[in-house]
Length: 102
Image (cartoon, rainbow, N blue to C red):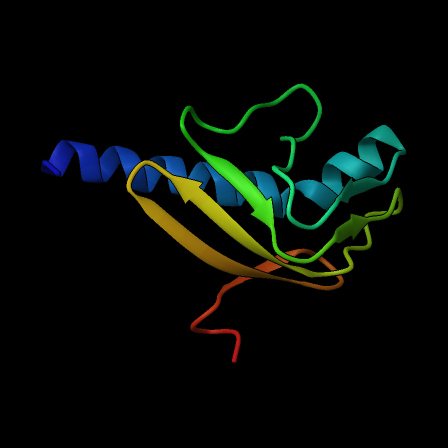
């Protein structure tokens, strides 16, 4: 990868993480729970999209209530040339990398 490509990938990775962190806000604003089933590709929040070539794949189910409470889950974020494992922590969907989650 060239430096420009690495910078672009880092920006896209951060965009995915911001969308995940924003799930409680999206759920409260829309007054609807967000439910991601395990082992399926998760949809981006309503009206938004993941960066091109990126997918979020829950390893365990994630539930964000209409009140914004986040159940927590394990996620795999897949992007061009990389896969990242994240832990989503209750109650606010705070993210930790799998290495930090032990």
